[in-house]
Amino acid sequence: MMNVLVWLAAILFILMVLIGGKKGVRSFLSLFLNIGVLFVAIFFMTNPENSPIIITFIACTLISWISLFYINEKNSKTITAFISTMITIVILLLFIVIVTEKSKIQGFGEESTEEISMFSLYIGVNFAQIGASVIIMSTIGAILDVAISIASSMHEIYHHNPIISRKKLFTSGLNIGKDILGTDTNTLFFAFFGGYLGLLIWFKDLSYSIGDIVNSKVFSTEIITIFCAGIGIALIIPITASVNAYYLVKTREK
Amino acid sequence: MYDIFKKRYKQVSIYILIALCFILSVFFVHNNESFYDRPIAEVVKTVLEDKTALTDMYDHSDHLFTQRITAILKNGEEKGQLIHLTNEYSSSGAIDQEYHVGDKLFISINTSPVKNTDLSGTIIDVKRDQFVLMIAWIFIFALVIVGKRQGLFSLISLIVNTLLLSFALDLYVKHSNINLLFICGVCVFLFTVISLLLINGFNEKTYAAIVATLIGTFISLFISYFVMWLTSENGLRYEEMQFLTRPYRLVFMAGLLIGSLGAVMDVTITMSSSIFALYEQDNNISVKALKTSGLDIGKDIMGTITSILFFVYICGSIPMLILYLKNSYALGQTLSINLSLELARALSGGIGVVLTIPISLYTSIFFINRKRAK
Image (cartoon, rainbow over all chains, first blue to last red; front, side, top):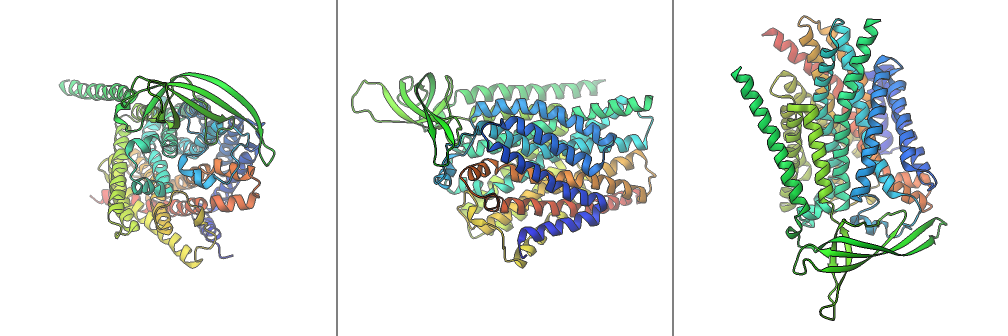
């Protein structure tokens, strides 16, 4: 098999094993389990009877479960991260459904019409809700990352300094969160712009004005996704910090 | 006392400035129709005229609606006049949607043969700028409220990076003889320095992160490039790349470079800030303890940061995947057509992320040792 994807996947696997050991193997497998969950979710979404929002919520729960408990085992770190993730997902999902309804960013933009002209577009599924699913699923990785990073660091800090007060613990959680906030929004920002570099050059080549770009469906979908992801990341920081501070101090008191 | 007061004063004035920007920009974007060349109309009345059930060639049932819309023109010579529009939409809404009173639409006005009759026109697109702006502000507030100073700085870094990228692409579009990969390489260097300095300030942990990010990003690009060369790009379906006006391979490689940069920075900053936090808690901590703790943190974040990339890249294709599947494409074919490039991006980014863990661990320890030696 001389396939680029196979090679890249093999290299990724070897690196993960070398650096992460057993946990590396599990991280690699969980990537594929997560993609599996995603594909099953997509498959269920093709049936118009199912609500994409509910499928998304179930998929997010499964993905969080796999990423947290399968890679890291079930312990206080991952349980607090899981609880914080679920709280954030629910709040964010409500917000995003409203956003996609209002801004009408579902489906495909006019830039894609040529490509999809040979398809039947009247397929009965609810593209508005699918649009909301896309946004929340794009964000789930980042939300999980923040949750586990904060939980993990707060446990480390607590481990090195067991007499720390709850308020101080919460503040140090927030401080770690502030560091991650910037970089995680950066991660998403660069990932999107890397993925849509072609589109950006297209806008420049066809001399779209700023007004044309901002109002076009393709661009506004992307930028709204980045913003919603950023909002999700900001939201989960105080949630995770307080859940962890509460939990760690509570268990010490016992 | 005076200093505290001064700081407060500065803080308050920043908040007032932000609030003022918010109010002004929202007001502007709701009344900016005259800045557009294209005619804009606001929907004032909608009547549902017709509803038909529809079955396509694959037996999917859908509904087709016809909506008669009266709208008022908001700009141009005919400003203030009523215009009649017709909108056809389906309940699935792949490329169409229902309109409600208050929606603002870009339209084209049909030239009417008879004077003094009501105008008629065609809908082109929705005016979305007010929503984009609103969500941008919610994002800004979330960032500043949670991140305070750091939130503000990461916001500035996002804006500066966007402008930088836009400028770099302008340069590329105007002077096509410059290699896109070279431009993006320079951009990556600037992005890294600007973002990390703005997010983390001038200190050792930032320097450690910058060094590790640059090493990690370029090594991972090199590995991907090597694999692509080795396999003569077998399995990559460039023909399905959307929105292309330029040589596809170059655009793809440049995207690879920029796409993984953020994730690599994420690793280096998480690693270095955790390792430095441990050092600050206990100045006498041994290098061995730092290595163990650092590697533990690295193992924790490895899977999640890689999956950020996987989700971002794959989820964007969900609507297209559903469209292919519903148009009777086989699963394997659908996936290979739509996901080969996305998966390559995600995998290559993942390689960068994992490689960067030891790199940033050792650079952080190097900088801590240097600090100790002083």
